[in-house]
Image (cartoon, rainbow over all chains, first blue to last red; front, side, top):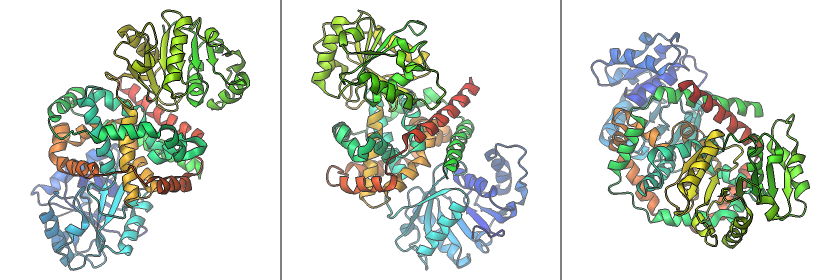
Length: 309
Length: 309
């Protein structure tokens, strides 16, 4: 599929995630006319024309955004699409109704993807006739920058659909990871939220400020984990003994931290102070600059990985 | 102090951390003769001469390692030092005895630093006459590469000692963060271990493999957090609403992940499978390559930050 020069992609939902995906796809299609965007907002065409160029740093970008199809009916949007990717509101009823309707009008072998960060495919597909076609393709925000896609099929999703989805993203230099189970929050968010919880606790306990905590992460595990994930890092940290050696050396400290964290309740009353410190420290973050630097980091790592091959 | 061309640094303990600090200091001293290494191993001189060059990628490095002082008595090692940095075994009794002895022979205003990852300065200094001088200066491994130093004073450590220590590291382009309380595992390890715990749980639950989990982190929060820490990232993720807006949008998913993780017990039985998957995936990690790529990442970020100023 990834070699088909006539591939047609339809995006349902023109929020931040939808538009970021649009920016990604536009960089990988032969023509903007292969992209269709559907949303219920009445000013869709002018909104898309105004918003999309912001995702492209290079102002000499030759993409003629006006060639993008903007659909005002779902039927028209999906009837000839090869891929239909949903980035709508996080609402189960809306998604169930959407897929029921999409199924009526889309080609039989079109891939159906949801960008949801929390509603499993098995729930979204409940009113569909054919439950083999839908899976979650959850990006790490923003998807036009970040390589990760979490593919989270329902138990009913066919192997063929999973494989075609993996193939699509791999062919475009992205990193699709197939999660073997539907689990609350999927993997990336669960990991990040576990660290966030401990972060909130440490600020609340007065050990460091919000900004100091961010600086700690930016100066240690951020750059480290950009290069080698946690298991690989600690496996290296254990020397010839590997991960097991690491736990022999420092396992007691690990257990003590876990035990200590296990008693932490960050459920109540932390919000006001943490929100205030964060706003005071950062105001409105310049995400364009952040994304530019992140791209440099990813490019540097990508170049080094190519050297290895 | 950072401008003193005659600064003398003594390192106690020539393990991996001690030698990595030696490599860092050698790059910032005017002469290797300003560095003294003390360790009880009998082959210390030949061991140091053999091991240290491995920390320098550039083989044309002009450092004459033979000029480094290698001391065979603690008294000789510390008697004229401005800074005494301990990276010995993680054993309270050994450290208490060490500082008691160091105090007898070191100049009155020498800074006393411990690299410990777990034993608080307040415990280490128990047998000292003057408890104002010692603090923990905990690196993120390996210290010749990673910018972070966690400064963890005892309640008795003087403000002046903390400030001189901060000044030393800042003048050398490092990132010293002063932790306001002595807490188990300090900050960086607590954060990393919180994420590690959830990682182990997800592998144990069969959601992803060790290698897939590492790939997820390397493709998402690793590069993101190298550029903007967790609070700043989610503050940006909330758009104009900031961190508070983020929690309004996705707070329920965050809470669900936390609640789910709170029931996790990774205390028993996970080790064999996780150790095996890690060894199978990585064998012996090439840390030299990892460190080289990490330096590129840090340099790229550093260059971008300078552009901003």
